[in-house]
Every structure is written in C-alpha cells, then in structure tokens.
Image (cartoon, rainbow, N blue to C red; front, side, top):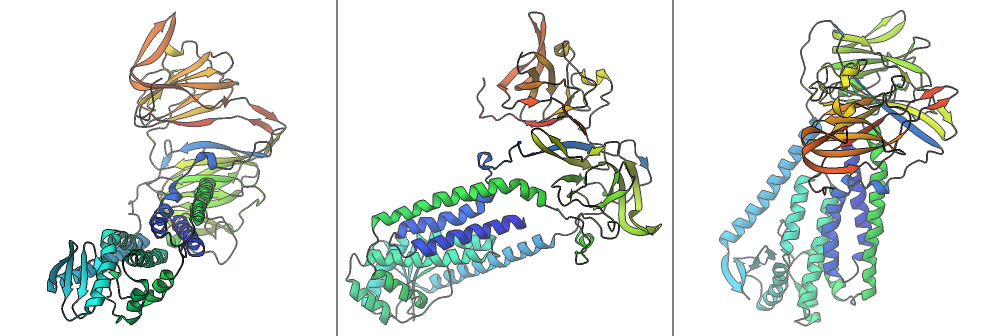
Length: 590
C-alpha cells in the first residue's frame, strides 16, 4: 500500500510539472482542462496496469532462477494441546484514513449547506434562461451548477459583465469539474497534490470564461472592471467566483496574451511517452514490489525496530545473533503462514545440523528469507501462541509459551548454485505453512492408484484409468506439472510429446482445484487444454479419449515445457512447472 501511495504522488507530481512548465501558459484552455481531469485519474489507475510485454527479463545466458513450490501442513504432527485463536490487531492506519474521509465529507456537506442557505434568502430571477439568485446587501458574484449568485450592491455595468462571465461557467459545466475534485479531496484527503490540481483547474475555468466574454465586449473595459472591482471572496472552494483577488492578476495577464500557435498542440503528445514509461516501470517493478512486501532481512544492526511489537513477521534479533548470510546470492525462501496459528521456522543445515536463521510468523503473513548461503537445509516448524525467547547452552532460542505442534519437515531445500553451459542457476523456494491440512494437498504418490480415479475428492483432479492406458511414467524422476484451475470451467489437460505428438498423460481437474502430474519422463512437451462441463469418455479407433459433453473451448498451450534433467558436477537439476488455467467467457471455441 505504501508503494502504491508513493507511485500516485510521483506520477501526479510528474504530470503537474509537465503542465506548469509546458502547458499552462498556452491559450488551449479546453485541452488543458481535459489534461487536468485525465491525469489525476491516470495516476490512480496506472500503478495497477501490468503489461507483460513491457517487462524486462534477464537472459538465460547469464542467469536464471529456479523456483520450487512446497506445501507444508500439520498432517502427522505431534499434537501438544490447543490454544485460543486471537483476533488480528486493529489497523490504525486504516482507522485514521476513515476518520480523515469522514471529516472531509462533513466539510463538503457544510459547504453545500452554506450554498443552500444563500439560495434560500436570495431573490429569484432569470438571465438568458439562466437562474439568477440575487443576494440582498451583498457585492458577491459567483456561480454553482446551473445558478448564478449575484449581489444586489453591484452597479448595472458590473452586473452586465459578471453575468456574461458566469453564464460561461454554467454553460461549460465547470461545476462538474469542481465537484469531481471535491470528491477526490474526500477520498484522498491525505494527498496534497489533489488540492494543487483543483487550484490549477479553477484558474483555467476563469481563463475560459474571460476568453469567451471578450469576444462580445470591449477587452479594455473588461480589464478595467476587474481592476476596479471590490474584492470579496466567499469561503466555498468549489464555486466559480468572479471576485477572487488571488486570480485577478493571472486573468489580466492571460487576457493580454496572444493566442498560442497551433503547432504548440504537439506538446500534448509528450503524454504518450510519459504514460509508456510509467507502464514500463509498473510492469518491471511488479515482481520487485512483491518481493519487498514484508521483506525484513536479518541484521545485527542494533537500530532495528521491534517488528514483533508491530505484529509483522520478522527475524527476531536474539535467536539470529549467529545467523549466516551470503550477500552475493540474490536468492530467497518465501514462506506464507496461514490464518490458524503463529509459527516459528528454523532453517537447519543438513551438513552441520546448525541453525542458520529463525523467523517468527504471525497469521496470514508472507516473509522472504534472503541471502541464504549455498547448502542443503531442512525446516523445523513450531505452531503456537505467545512468542518468547530463552537462552539454552548460551544460545538464544525462540519458542511459544503455548506450543500446539512441531515438526521437522521432510523436504530438502537445495540452495546450491548450479553453473552450467547455459549460465548460472540460483534456486529459490516458495513455501506455505498452516496448522490445518489444506484441501488441495495431494494423496500419497507412491501408489499408482493415487492418479487413476476420476472425481478424487482429496485433490479435485485425477488421471482417469481409461484415457491413461498408454501413459508413460518415470518413477526415478521426482518432478511435477502443477495445474491450478479457475472457477469458470472444468479442465482436461493432455501432455503430448513435442516431436511425436504422442499423448503421455491425460488429467481431469475440477473447478478451483489443484492437481500434480508427477514422474514425467525427460523430454519436451506441450499441452492440449479443453474447458467444459460433464466429463465423459469414448473410444475412437481403439483409443480411449476423455472429453466434455458441454465443451466450451479448446487450445494448444503456448509454452514448451522442457523436462530434461540437467546433469552437473554438483548433482541434478530436475525441472518442474506451475501453470494456472481458467476459461474466459470471451474466448472463442476452437
């Protein structure tokens, strides 16, 4: 969220600098009006726009990063008792934001109430079919929405010029612009640049009205009227005020300015490379932003804040006094903790049995452990409540006063860097931990029957017996193709050899489920993907085929999946892949 706020401020500042330096002195008032309305909206939208083609990727000739996904749950753990589940702490930043919105909204309602009072005491009249509200004993002059407010103390000449000016505000619907910025001020009250945008467009409204008026009356007399006017400003920011002392000088200077040349309009084209540059930045920084989110590297700096007090997952200072880092390695272990319990994760070296890092997780938080030295590691995980620390054999350890479960996870995390003829392979891992067994966790893959039953309720997917009669497995290779489906359709995936187009595996996955196709032989493959409902099977030319009675779409996957094992002097690099599939109702049926 903080990164998003900073992006808004930077983008809006950039647009304002361009306006002030290049555009505001030109007489293309309507173009400038459009610019001042569009650019604040772009500033709020652009941080969310991620165009894949704008991303800058690192060539595999120099380096690549292998990411494996591991899911850990508490199945088979030793139960040590239960503890109370505490509610998440109050988000004071969100509370402060809502307070600010409430105050800003009350101020806006108060301004509208003041207008209502003025209108109620005014004498109603019309001018050129426009509503006039004559204010008794007043020399004020302004307009809002479709009504012009005019003090009865003004003389006839003043009233004539003011009416011509304010009619332009009404006809051009300048009040819509002002109300738009008032709502932005309510929602983004913390953003000072919204107020700057509103002040810029207020000045522009006056330029537009003045330019229209001097086409019907003498410019010199009109300027004299501005200079001789009695200045009185009502404190309602979103009305178009005729007598506004701070704007008079700017209006007079603009009235005396020559009309800008048409070629100057090409300056607006600068907006195109600016927007493209912003889109490139947002696309390329997406992965970096995700990595930095909740990324607190362990450090021996005594000035580190007390993250535990902030309820943010962290590497506690005491148990990490002897932690090991390799700043030359840009790797990570991303760990996501579930909602049911806090957790303590110790990273243990298999070679030395020494702990190299300790992380304390709060509920529903992700933490990136970075700069992990080369080596093979296992994880020791504890679940519980009330984090505390104690010293055992002169070593500080983190523990839970109310510990619920503990385990040594069986997965080995190999962080050895693989140097091959194609470049450098730097492993990283994503892990999910939770106190409850996930519905998507797979059954035991040691049995061939685990992948042969349609409608397997444990995983939501299967490799049906009939359509997999000629399937190919390599039990010596512990690889996988992980498939996650969306909620719009069921999916049938056929894995076929790129060269021979022979189908080696067929999988059927229900909506919103996850399934692993394992033990895939070495080779290069592509996917034939079918979306639909009502799974069925049929035999064609002696071959059993899986299909949907209600087929929605069919496609050949875009990417080639290379399952070739890379052999190096340090061991084997076994590729695995994650894919997400979902049906878009706008996709054509092939």
